[in-house]
Image (cartoon, rainbow, N blue to C red; front, side):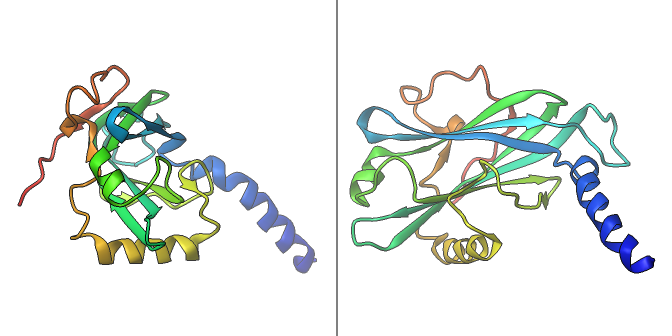
Length: 194
């Protein structure tokens, strides 16, 4: 009898888990746009699902949200180059949608002989320093599984110094490239340090 109930129990838990463990932030859409002078805009649309932390000040508000894209481009030589950056969102309200933007300079695109959309990308979202579990969604563009993602992250970590500060958040982009801040969240700005 217990042998029959166990698979049924596991089945129901897998149905209920997404309801209980829903991510605090959902990545709804990732879009790459080529702009003037070959600049590339990375547009990441987010939805706040509320704060389920037991010590939350208010369940309708989520704080300390880190958004970190990892882009893998195949350069002219056939090798992969990895670019990453991050922004910290101060606060979002439940059911609120915001868009985060990052930019790749056109001269880098020319230098590395790359086109607008990366071959692979991953959008990591962390809440109060803890990364949300990777899930197959718009956040994992063309990445087949977690093993492939870990391999990509490992290679990116090896290149982090060589490509530091190349992918830039919107608030550091030239005004002619990014001049519309209406959909963006409230950032905690972290200027690059040398």
